[in-house]
Amino acid sequence: MSIQREQLEGDVLIIGAGPAGLSCALHLAKLIKKHNASGAKPELSAESIYVLEKGREIGAHQLSGAIMNPNALAELVPDFEKSAPLDTPVTDSAALLFTKNSSLRFPITPPPFQNKGNYVVSLSRITKWLGGLVEATGVNVFKEFGGAELIYEGDGVAGVITEDKGVDKNGKPKDNFTPGYELRAKVTVLAEGTRGSLTKKLVAAKKLDNINPQSYGIGVKELWDVQPGRIQPGYVAHTLGWPVSTDMYGGGWIYGLSNNRVSVGLVLALEYADPQFDPHAAFQTWKTHPFLKKILEGGKLVRYGAKSLPYGGWYAMPRTYVDGGLIIGDSGSFLDSQRLKGIHLAMKSGMLAADTIFEALKSGDTSSKTLSAFPQRVEQSYIKKELWQVRNFHQSFQHGMLRGFVHTAFQQITGGRGLIDPMRAHAGHEAYKKINGRPAPERFKGDGKLTFDRLTDVYHSGTRHEEDQPCHLHVADTNICSTKCVIALSNY
Image (cartoon, rainbow, N blue to C red; front, side):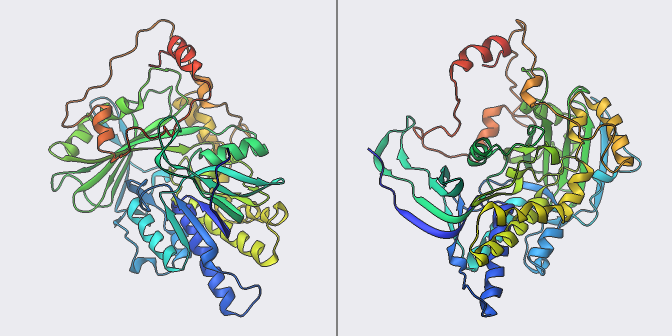
């Protein structure tokens, strides 16, 4: 028996209320307001823009501690400095080389690590603030609504079916069952973040892949309140070396926020060869370095989180348009993996998508013919300029840091071309080596003061869910877990 679903129709449906999705909604609402004020036809409505946010509130899935280039924000909200919750401007940018017991500051900070004019921000507060601006324009933001399935009409995307509420862990309806809504729109914008579930399905269904597979990184981070005087607001450091081995790609960050708060984290490419390597344990080990220990000791862990990043770059960017649909932000690989910055690129991609949608709504044509103007706008913007310079960057490190630095040196003097262009890449999981009978290592336990086990950190993530709710992660073939993963990779 098919489920009867309530249907709601609008002009634009944006999946995801992160920087990209909110920037798209806000810029489009402003364009519509200006258009209607001029008396031009057809009359459009910001109330026909719907934004879905799966969290309980906007910003719920963001964690404090990020470096933000304000150029896109200045375009979107020209007077942003009057009201935006910018924590502190960057006052010092350092690059540090770690060995196990010592650190060396580079005498000259490499250009990718320079942050003059940028801000240390709480991304959660920034998105909450943007969300308020969006709602003030009349845009409808639906919180605690996740997209479950795309709706297709012919060859195009026509909307989304939202997740059913009140189902148990086996997907069976409970007494409080409420079917998801059928939300239809002329244009559906996927702003889900890295490897979003709907984006993944759309890319596969429409064969939108680029010449390289997408590659990913994982950033494991904590937010701490530290003793006064341990770190200056606006101090930014990026670390290379220990405990990340030279056959891997990764490094750490230390961001000083106001009020004796600090964001620390370790980011690692998910293409390491050792299947027993544990990014969380590596992060905890990294915190025991004397440089970190001096900052954190005597402080208090406030929050924990982890985030995936799209590392693939320009040659892994999917085709970002289909009939009735666009892909923006991290979903579309709008991230500079060399600088580890993507907020401004995500926001700009959302604004360029809004420009494209606005023209499509005015013309009444939301097919690929009109929406293909989006990647053309990207090509003409600073997004292309920035990402083209690092188009071969991450691929250079697939065989370790040392070889990567050699390739990067040539890329720096050839405008990103390097020795090979395009440099091909492999999917990260292909780097895994078999375990060959090695026993599984002991789980990292931590000391409960400076370092923590995984369960303690997850507790500090603020995750809340019902005991019998459906799992949001699905394994396509569960037999792999009991055979290949355990036997070949010792993945318990």
